Length: 196
Image (cartoon, rainbow, N blue to C red; front, side, top):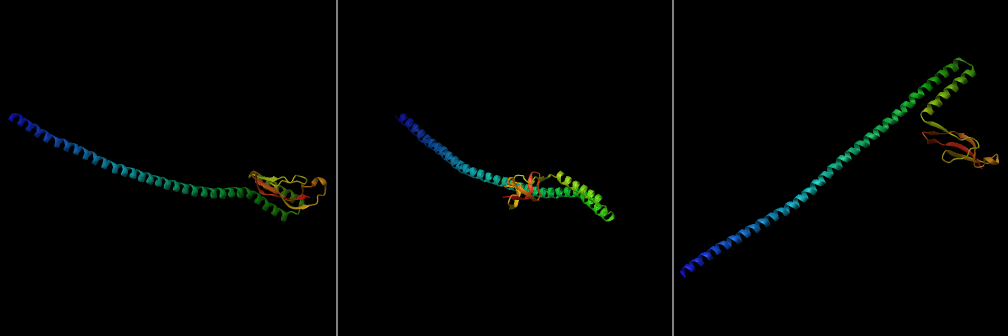
């Protein structure tokens, strides 16, 4: 029995010794897992927060770049528009200089010659040249003849008079000032008198 007691004591010692080791190992494993979870949770929160902050910073950077690009584009287009307007005017003036030269020559010849017929021919030539330069630039005359239909989009009625003939009621009776279009856009309405 003494042997059995010794064996039982040894077993109980072994079991006693083994149990706390198992418990300690389980406790260690549990605490390691808890610590890892605790470490992971703040990391995930921080990493999610950091991701959001990085996204915000990236979006802000993109916004600032886009805004500066738009401002540069706006400045560049306004500058180009001004240059285009000034060069368009320069081209028109350059073409009109030839007409101005012709007027100066006509004025000189008027003082030298007293022949009305040659002066009239010279003025007609200058007028035709001037008209052709303007037509090349896209200028068109708006048709507004006596007896034509009154069109609000092209005509401006400055007054209304009793129609001299029955067929002129509501139509153009007289043209006071011609109207013009520039590239299909009305730049001056034809001023007309209509019949009532």
